[in-house]
Length: 170
Image 1: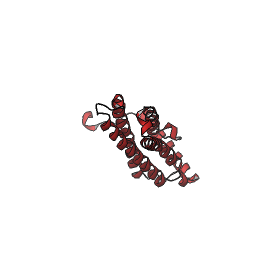
Image 2: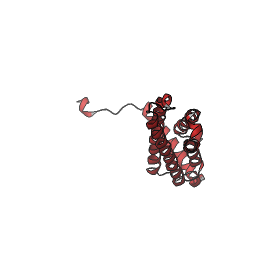
Image 3: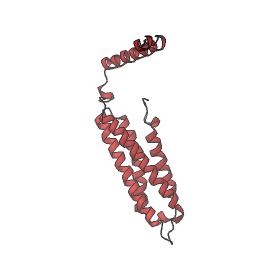
Image 4: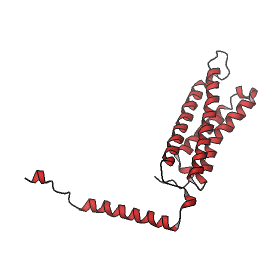
């Protein structure tokens, strides 16, 4: 599937969900005492989706890949802080003990986002795409000719009888 807007990307949607759920987690009274941690966790989680969006809108594949890795780094930073919170949430007197299950779920979600970003980066690194900045009328026309040729071949396959097997005929 070809995505034309970053809002269509499954990884962006998951990154937005991660940031939204962290915002809810940060409403816990525990974070009123740890404003620095809360602020850093909030900024790191929001940075994931923002870097996906910014990279998507850039004109070259190399720049897009760079932003994908920045987003991946922000997802790792988010996950690192969540691991620290998960450890604190196991203490018997912890004020975030009731959030332990959500913290673990957020760690899994941040891992999912990281895996998606890695897959996207690998796909782009292994493709011949240079990015929208390099698209010309000539390349667009070539792509259109290739699409029409492929559609024609598919139509031929539908209407042409399968070739006879000489071994079966004897």
